[in-house]
Length: 97
Image: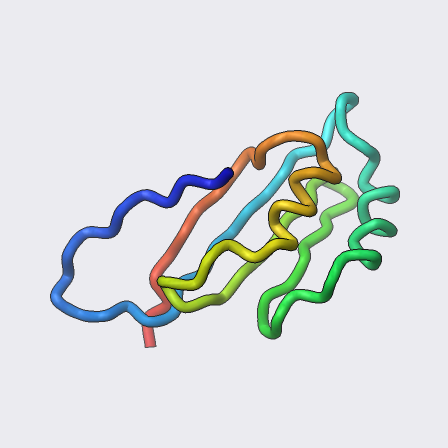
């Protein structure tokens, strides 16, 4: 499960947030080619969110744009299950207008 750090009070409603979730693949995880094929089997992410694949760096991930109060997408849990472990990077940013 993903833990989101509480935000500082800034006096405004940030609205849209960006979540960046990445896994570095290694000998304990499925190869990037297999994961790329299996991503096609998952339910598509709502636009403009997208799955990320970097074959050269052997990384997969997700870029999610969502409202701050939106729950994590089920595709994140599905990708975690495919990789077989928690992500190496989970960061959250305020999208400034």
